[in-house]
Image (cartoon, rainbow, N blue to C red):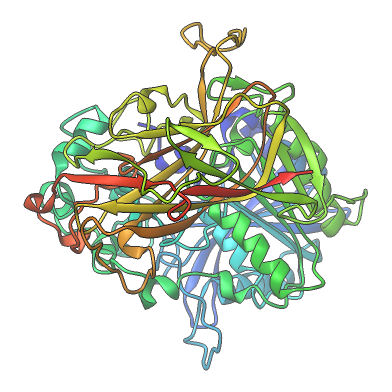
Length: 620
């Protein structure tokens, strides 16, 4: 198994962009420091400065919980900065172990809550730690030009985002990439209250270990009894069995997580979206349309900044990438699909490097539109001055008899519905690929062929007639379901799918086993844990067989469904083991027993009274 920080892009970028230890050693000098924060805690910080001291350089920072290795002033990494061009351009590169991780002192806190009104030096958070770090750097590191920037991917992206709040005057540019914003509603650990089982277990078994003091080491994780991800998590049973069989109560955050099964103050305090006010640095938010971990974060942090700062200098870039894919591949393909250009190379050369060069070095130009997205389906870069786009037409697709999606409500008052048996002991898999159970998830499932699911009796599938013209959907998709269940709780998963014509020829660059005729390409999905349908704070049971409305938002897309294709919507009640199983009984799932899991008949209704549909915006 690869080291965790490589899998998640936890420190920097992959070997794909490797510059070479020897070149860096020849051109940069490394110094290690223990920078003291306002409360006396010292954070381990490695600084790489250009050997050419005839000019001054801006400071470019990464703050990470995933180690700033290699440790030792005689040890150098293979790359500095987001891509090799940065080291060639000349920056002072700073890498810091955040509070309570590896060589830094203090106590670690996952998604440490921001403290709005700090009353003493004991009130510290990631915003204050970043402020104190920048303050020390500009005063103590020679040959800096007084300007600092910060960037990071995933968790380091979260720290880059937190640097924007109460920012240091020297912080002139920040690029939070795949940043976290809310771990209960939309990022990483939960979606609408549903727990991301395989990802959370495989992440925290290594990451969530006690920090007994500065250390460069991490303990190994538990031994697995099955290489098959689906079988491993199904055999695991109810969530309390995780501690009984594997973690043994030794992982503090996992234990805390199980104690907070609703959107209580523990989760609310860790949501950073309310605090992006008075943002002064230039901001470049980056995300991937196929990011299974933190797609919610960049979209909603951008929205928060736009709403709270009428005058801001914030840009959003969304490309056809998985989590951090812009930094570890050329972006020329994803899953079974190829693109006419290397999208990551385009972004790194034409967007990221010019952004930091302009705001930190004052060279070149940077006239990027507010929002730049890579529109899938059409496979081209699109520029917008607002997001979601303004020039759109609101449309709806309604479920109808005969597994049809239609552009108007069904007529007639009869209570029409489709029904399926949802069995938590035979959950619908989220992908047809079941590989090493120690991995967090199958990385390319977010545009996988869904024919494996549509053939199951516990998955409903509705589709349009072949489209008579291209249809481009840009922005969020809202699901509006009228449902009932014979249980007292249920999950509802909605998937939006691009169905290729049966006559579609196989792609020359795709694997020989992939048949593109009739391919059901996943475009977007989302889950709603039914008991949270009215409130994340106060869950409610379903009344068996009572028809209820369940509404939730799917993350944004920018996708063209081409002429001759069909739009399909699938509805199901499990997505395993990416999400944990719902017992279909109104209980605290984190303390559920194996005996709580029960079968249930779930219905989805469509009529003029109970018109299940999806709502979206079409680009004019």
